[in-house]
Image 1 (cartoon, rainbow, N blue to C red):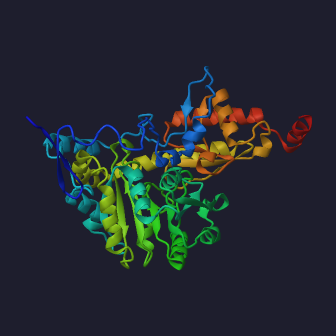
Image 2 (image 1 turned 180 degrees about the vertical axis):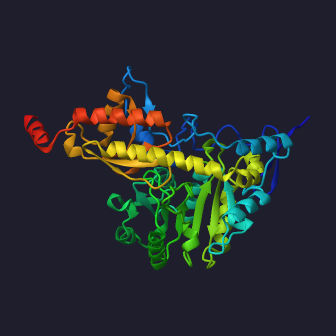
Image 3 (image 1 turned 180 degrees about the horizontal axis):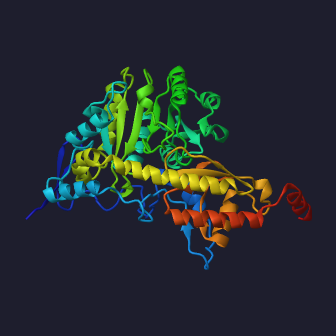
Length: 449
């Protein structure tokens, strides 16, 4: 009995071959099969500056001193900053309800988007549910915002020092990164002339991070207005990384940049991670602020399409979102900020008293940057060597600010328990006193080389 092979081409034409006369399926003419599996160009372009530096630091801590890590921006590490009971109860209720076990829309449940919109909406920057895209953490919010605004070959303007993820994401997408300077002598305000000088016809957006990681700075209303003036003159949209929004100390006021904009379109990225102390829950969002309809439907539609790549954030946390936002008591936020402010003051005072160090007073977030007067530490070539030796001798780990494109500084995370902060500062003092050289001593050492 004859058998037949049926082939269907892409144009739906059907060809029937009697068995024995069918074309060979094992070989393609002119091609010799061989294994040639290679990593993609995107993966090769993906580069994390922190990992590149930290992974090369091979020193071991002092075995006689317990390790104190002031390097990781995760407020949950030491267990001293738990989230509020209302937050965990909200997730338990969402889980027990059984209503959030399936897929949600890729942009998030409509009801949850409405909750976020209502929470952040104000007369100066009104928001509706359609203006909110829920994401898998603020990192994905930044990734989607970059992906919708910039094409390969375009450039983005990024703060220096600044969060390393901006560069990591941009380079993987074939987007050029241009760094604009922050000014430590002005509490890390933006060098506005430098910022504006970098704009060209290929600039897709400016990233503004406020409050700042790694600086702990908070921009004033007047400074934000000057940033908006630059963006307005140059017709460049803003990607606002505001994950530390509202995490400011009592003497400062946090101003969402969108509330001050009359014409500059802004994608504001935020989430639960830091203010609610649950970074592992991966709940973020993008707020589309576009009062002049410059983004129009195109950017919103683009964000919706991009969100469909992973089908949105965790549904259980979405189910808890309304209760998290509305039930978390004000004293929870107050207590968190009081702790961070106390640690910031303690650390700043202690390090200010150490010869050769120049800490910059923070105003919010969870970080403090410290300048190293390298001329007084001639044994070390740079901040990486300085922090390596600090680990080796004192078992204190601070991130060298080369990780943030800003050499000869290091970053301190302020979320550790108070007694650990006191001990860490004491060890840093001991380390600096051992290695500090006055100018004459440093010159003598150079002559002896």
